[in-house]
Length: 225
Image (cartoon, rainbow, N blue to C red; front, side, top):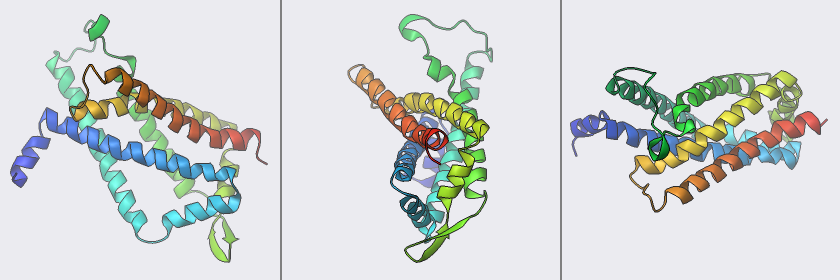
């Protein structure tokens, strides 16, 4: 397939849905890995800080961040483009009578743009708070590194920040539950035989990720000193 043909394919509705599925898969994998790493806060400050230090040591972090940023931009662009096209194809009206019964659009589907907007704001504020926030240092096994554990305690003892974090993670759960299911649909792997199991698995995955992330601020705010 020529480069021109590839560009042409990804410019179509089906191509954009493939890109949505691929970029969604990248971010779905990232949030799971990130959540698992965050759980090291339950092990010890040293383990948590060593994990954070390992992530930013070496050039691999720049490759990972580039992939994630490009995936996010592509995902948002495709989402906006497809949503706009759907509205235009229905006459541009936001007030059309919604289908009912088997053809009804799931609430999560109708709210995906809202979820996505909230999550985009959350990503920006999260980066501002953690990646570019206060810098403390500590030493673990003779290695000087950033004391992320101290920063986490500082931020998650602020009621307003914890409340915002909890709200954003609830939105993440809904976004993931629909998004993971949509990945299979984008790749043409969703049919009536597997739709229900995939829907349940998507909800299970979404709850697992959200609960894992939420355990950190709730533990810090209510338990950790």
